[in-house]
Amino acid sequence: MAKTKKPQRYKMHVKKGDTIQVISGRDKGKVAEILQTLPKTSQVVVKGVNIRTKHVKPQQDGESGQIATFEAPINSSNVMLYSEKEKVASRVGYTVTEDGRKVRVLKKTGEIID
Image 1: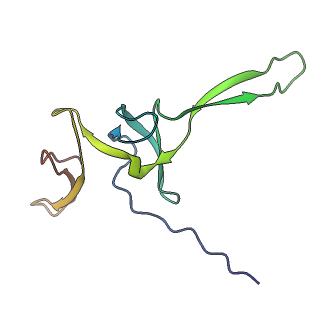
Image 2: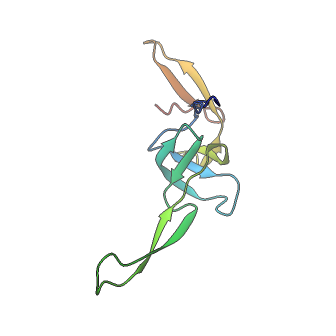
């Protein structure tokens, strides 16, 4: 019997709702918001990035088929957190505040995200 390996959950530097900039691929340079994170595959779904079309068959008689568009996931390594204030993308660091909370910090600007 073959052992099935449980997929590893990856630690991700971005969260749902973060503003990011795409740093590689067809949509390079776009600034958008993360709609969903998929930690098991280390992917993110970004608003308006990696748009795919799907041809949907009609479900009932008389109904016409349609072409649906949706955002497909991209790898989380292809996005960087983006600072709206400074208009710059930056790597992420972690620090602990005075009250003991661990927060994410932009390396270039020192801006606290969480």
